[in-house]
Length: 256
Image: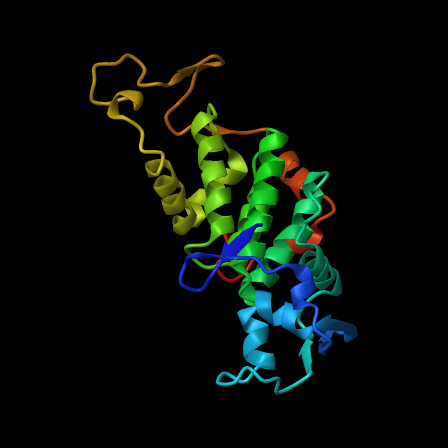
């Protein structure tokens, strides 16, 4: 039987679905058009402390209301949540553009305080990039930073992936160089991610040693210390944004 995190950090056994399908339903109204979702109260409140605080009295756990509205949540995102709630499964992305809806679901899971769903989404997104031998693009990282705070699982996974990508690259793509110059927090997070690799000193080149090029030569030939890769970077950004225009606007804590 699988388990999920509890409030004190320990894992608790997951209750079987049939034990949570009580006869009591609550009515949720989602999106600008108030799409109606009748859901099992016990199941919803078992997974979400957010909903438990709304539908239950703190002292005796009795129900105090049967309706609640989430007008700011997209209907498509909430439908994905309902699918996870009853099946405890997430459909994996088939292509990169499918990552966007999963990120929106992740932000909803954070709002609803469902750590198990957050962890499932992070694992699904991580597996997609790993299995396809790709890395999160700049726009994805920007979108995550705009909608999350520090010490966040999705941030950590994406920044760790980007740290590897940039470390192994011969030069920094132009659009990444601009983003790193403008956003100090992202740069700091990348350095922290590299520190968490806990590399042995002998694995890291020492610029204090006598050296001819200090690592400035690659299989493409010599490169300058501040060399930035040019050329196809804008096309790369365009491909990342294809079919995902709603994520191109970044605000809040985002990477500008």
